[in-house]
Amino acid sequence: MAKLFGFSIEDTQKKSKTIISPVPKNNEDGVDNFISSGFYGQYVDIEGAYRSEYDLIRRYREMALHPEADGAIEDVVNEAIVSDLYDSPVEVELSNLKVGEPIKKKIREEFKYIKEVMDFDKKSHEIFRNWYIDGRVYYLKVIDVKNPQDGIQDLRYIDPLKIKFIRQEKKKRGTDPSIRIQTDKEEVPNPEFDEFYLYTPKVQHPTSMIGQMGGKNSIKIAKDSITMCTSGLVDRNKNRVLSYLHKAIKALNQLRMIEDSLVIYRLSRAPERRIFYIDVGNLPKVKAEQYLKEVMNRYRNKLVYDANTGEVRDDRKFMSMMEDFWLPRREGGRGTEITTLPGGQNLGELADIEYFQKKLYRALGVPESRIATDGGFNLGRSSEILRDELKFAKFVGRLRKRFAAMFNDMLRTQLILKNIITPEDWEKMEDHIQYDFIYDNQFAELKESELMEGRLGMLATIEPYIGKYYSTEYVRKRILRQTDGEIVEIDTQIEDEIQKGIIPDPSTLDPITGEPLPPEGGDPAMGGDPMAMGEQPIDPDLEAQAQVVDAQYQKDTKKAEL
Image 1 (cartoon, rainbow, N blue to C red):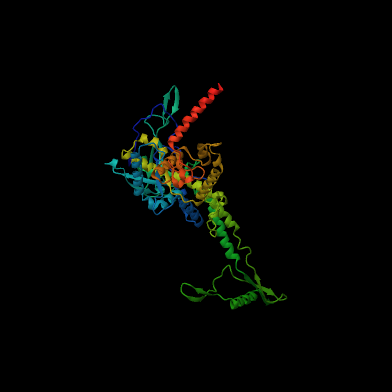
Image 2 (cartoon, rainbow, N blue to C red):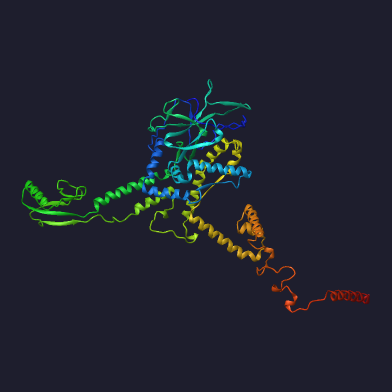
């Protein structure tokens, strides 16, 4: 077990020894820094909330089986992953990446290959649902060891109950566990860590050991061989990765208890029961009780229908909580009497159930309006849309961002193994690679359409003042909210469409009427011919002679004035 299973990708550039930090890189995954020892034990929670990640994941999966929680989860998953007949649920977006087009083409091809290996187009709903419920997802990247340049050959899902990420501090023989480096006469702690995964094929009880170093039940897997994507929620007190369902644990338990108590109350209080007062006269106690039983057996009808056999049988030997009351009454009373006890009141009130349902939906980030099944979808104005829907759309966008980290890790491994880029190149490109999910939130679409309608209305109002008080660039940036990149792109598209003849050239249009101007030289149909207006044509010789006479007249006038 000294050698890890799988593969690792190392940077070609060695980091400077003067860069020192006591904090390990990527300390945001909720993983403890384990000191090297013989085994890795589980954390015992004396508060009784949860003992391990095993308990958490099992609880999350049980919560997903509840109808109300399942409905809220489906709302989140359906908004995040939109299945389309022709388009893939997600595509890689490289518009901000400053590389050549051949590199972009290869990146798109490799991303498409990764989706095919995962079968993501068909299983996207299940993959995202498992990640949302468990709060984490693991995939084993299988490669050909002899030919790693062929890239990823298979991506295999790993149950989160069977794998755990370990960060172990390195120890050197004969040295203190805390490694210290002497720099500028200052002691700076600089511990080194080994990061790997511990895979247990057989799920063990949470109170048992995760696995032993060199044990038969656990396998150490290199960090780069596993793709891990967590929810981003971490319990810092216990260093546990949480799911988005964690906030709804209390609300769901309360809803369950209220529903169970409501069922018990209605079963016990709903039926009306009768009270039989039997006159026993002056009979002794023993004979009075015997007489009462005889009357009960005489009038009680305990014939029941057996739905399994189709028979009618006598069930008098069984007593139930719905039985009527038989009470003896001595001589001197009102004699034999039968009265009725009313059933429970206010059995139709469900205000407490509805409250905890709304509380559950609020805990899961789903709008409360989605609980109601009688109301339809209203395609009205965005001002009539609840603000919760807009918050929900932003929440789904954050989930997509976090979930896309899984594609980032797979794409990084694939590009480096196929020698398309280097690890140093990936560090520069990572922030500029985005993922475009198909969007299906009608509320956000309505909001965008109304914003565009308002901007166009403002443009129509301010258009007479363009060139006098406002410039065209100011209007495009402040009114239409166009960015510099969008302005350049739109101008290029307009020029291209003018050259293709799709739209007319604005320079050939009358600014007042918007109609095409007459061509140079005049057009009889458009009034360009002087004869069409009833004017006499001018002889060019006569016009030149008249200009000479006029010039001579002006000279004579100036001489006379002098």
